[in-house]
Image 1 (tube, rainbow, N blue to C red):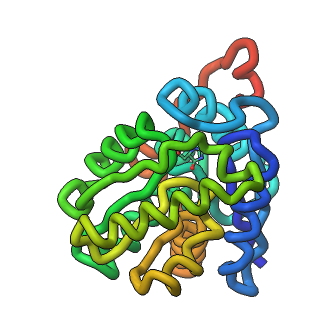
Image 2 (image 1 turned 45 degrees about the vertical axis):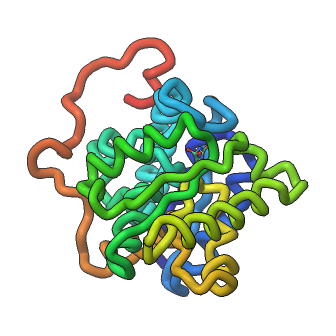
Length: 243
Ligand SMILES: O=C(O)C[C@H]1NC(=O)NC1=O
């Protein structure tokens, strides 16, 4: 069995379970999902400040995963926090859910829309579109204008808003696919795809299958060049945990 570590970079346990369930729903029999979240950090990631905090927790979990002998890692937050730093530490593949969902969307449609949570995090998705080279593939970005943890409050309001925005995107954007812009939306994609008749893509499940593919291809993170292990130096204070 290959252990695949799925990291929820926020510390919300309910969302970690939502993410874990989605990951396990698509994992191959040869894969075992190890779902984790940081021991310390921020309960939801809703901007650049939160991302900076979450990235440290991601690195701590990557280190722990390596020690456990995992074969690959998923960063299950739509900002892909700490992705390249995590790749410096990791031997196996590290895939972010935004990266995974965007790549998959370009394989099934010429243009896609993104539906995320807060308006203020749309800029993070925009930056990723630029970084990954998908700016011209994304027709529009929509926000349900609810906090990330509204997805775990049990009222169903956030889920209803996601559905509404997906229907609006389908009508207005002339996109062939929709990307769900939050790890906490991972359990909505299949049902929305069936109901709306348009590929609605979740990055958690997409990333799990990409990690499995890379493992099957015998590909880990390159250690040749700028993703080599970090240069050895003493880390002081709380960062000692990353030594
Ligand atoms: O940016 C967002 O709205 C979603 C992002 N924040 C979070 O805590 N998990 C996520 O996937």
